[in-house]
Image 1 (cartoon, rainbow, N blue to C red):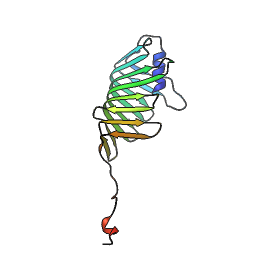
Image 2 (cartoon, one colour):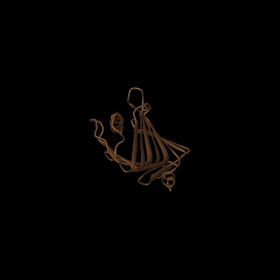
Image 3 (spheres, rainbow, N blue to C red):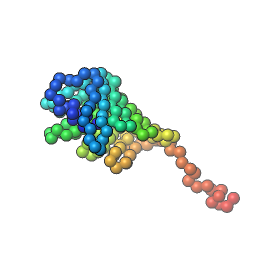
Image 4 (cartoon, one colour):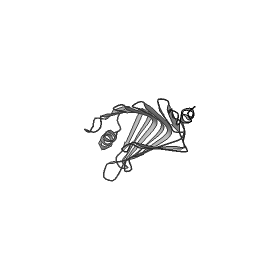
Length: 161
């Protein structure tokens, strides 16, 4: 997703048409395709805003949202992404939230606004879901969930009955 947003912001042309596919990719990441009803690019502020039926696809991951905003830092690199009314599908799991924010410097994705993560029979909800993609770590604040698991202890067998 990063390479595509940087490519879009680097363009000097006026805003792209309704579908704005990105052409850049790196060896580490497959190409990203972003489609939206409207795309606004502002090189002076280093911001790109995609609105209306936003769909971003990269490899097996698809993000849909009402609005996606990308910001660049002073060096032209991606600083952060924000999205509203978000659904992410990837590798057998789905996450939904009212709002998502990705901070590149921290490699941290924060979901708020009734966030829910579902994979198979596992379902987690909470006040805030924070994901560190590079570490494979997830924290759910004020968690509620259902995680299928075998019995922790078979009491009858342990007591010899």
